[in-house]
Length: 501
Image (cartoon, rainbow, N blue to C red; front, side):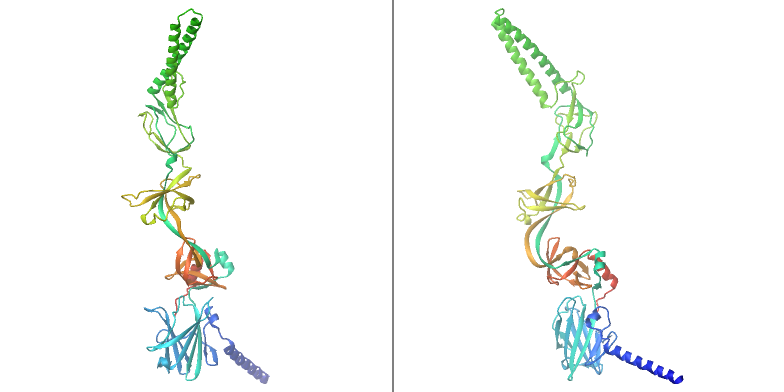
């Protein structure tokens, strides 16, 4: 029994040794796996094994060794663009940089490998290219020393997060593809909504009198012919009395003319009597026409009861809004007093302030976009007027756009921003403006590479508010996160990815 137990123990020990050797031989982490979170693999010559994170060297870089030979890889960026600097050691003592040939190959997500050649400079080897941000990549280092080849690999991750398609959809992130676009150079000018002066009416009573009623209020919307005010006017009473008197005189003159004409035709009375009656009729007709015309000028009916001869009703001449009311009950007003101002707000003017340098850019008939500064509202119109003069005090000219305003959104006095296209340009690469985020001091988009999204610092060019030109940093055809791309930035903050060299 004891012999069998010893045999079993021996078998277990042997199996454990074999398994350990298999793990050491085959568990090698590639640079890409390291970029995805695995620990780096160090390779020296043909011998391989898994090592912990490289220790830091004297210059703060990653320190690799093979026997008595070692090197330290750093990214130096103090006062200069980021560059690889490699320090050599033998028996942990500095070694002349010219004693060894070193090469570095850098691999990024979505980009071909970048090969760095290193040359001696001072007590180190310096790479021949800039190490572009972000410093998120797989690095392969090769060195030849005394006829032996050495290889090391490591990875570092920065500004990178992993998100599935489902997670992106849940965060309302849209994936778009960078590519050519037409960028419109947009000029922005300040403006203000004003009354359409062609639809502004100043109401005057045209007769003097005492205000006995005024049923409308300032700001009230009214219809044409709505009652605005009632006056008790002695002048109107006199005109109506004159009209009534001329009307009666005309009726009497017609009767007299008819009788005298008949008597003259029957040769009972003299022709002179008939001619006098005819003249009186003509004078009565002239007086009646004058009295009627005087009442029509004031828009009132000549008819009325004896106790309402002085009543004068003032009615709205148009549909609109009462924007000013300068009248009160019991007030005595003159015939030329401005008592109401009514505005038709179905159309308004967008008055644009144009600086002298922009006068050659804006044209009559040019399409512009009007945007409210206080809330979300937008409309499109055409420039209908450009002032001929530059203001002496403001040193600006005025231009105008007539805007439909059926819903009353554009209120006079509202400040607006006016956008117009000054020119257009085709660009080879552009991205959506809402995709741009700020990471550290970079303007970035988050490129989509499989399940990973990684920040790509960009040099930006022209923009029209919807699309922005990419001068450098992203190639056409690359997918990127748009829409709610801030969700990616927030996820990046949670991941705690650091700027690690």
